[in-house]
Image 1 (cartoon, rainbow, N blue to C red):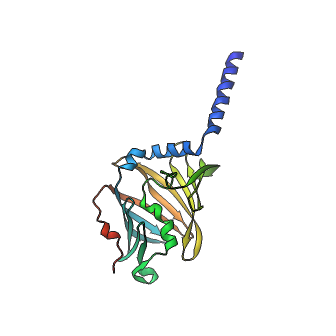
Image 2 (spheres, one colour):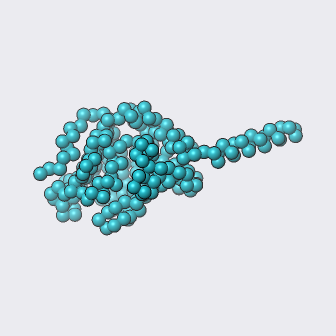
Image 3 (cartoon, rainbow, N blue to C red):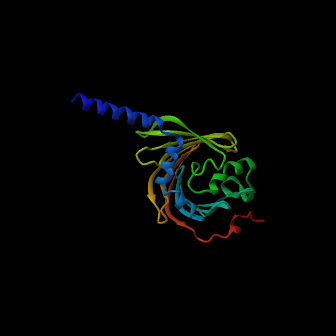
Length: 238
């Protein structure tokens, strides 16, 4: 019995040591594997997502088209009016009749720079080192009753963002980042739920709740991968 207690104590100590030895890369690698793995993510050339958006008591429909590395375009329809946002590696433009912008208007350079992650699949943690970013563990924090692993990601420009990962699923349940808006820098908090595996094997959240001074809920209705996308759709109309 004494020997058994010693063995159990040794196992407990080893398990504790392994938990404490976990690195940021360990957490990130598990997350990437959970959402499909590098092979699946690497095969995605384009993504088209149809969603419903609820914001400030209003309902919108939205279509987001991504041509990986080349262009991102979101078109939201509100009572027959189209709100368009487009990002490319070299610029961006938008149309927002609700804000009086009925003609295509260039997006400020700093906002374009901050939005470059929109041109990727897999999120900011995927291939973060190749993007010049650094990741580190930042402790644990409860998110809606789940004790998550908190990661701090610092990009090549020194901007920090935080990811909260559920250790049971290895999915991101919350993300915090400073974003630049016409009203100045604000903290954008996004929570993710209802993860589902798509037909290509990529696991994505079908529900996203975003708060940056106002709350917006996006629900994915349909997602398609590797459709042909004409790069001309990302060009600003003249």
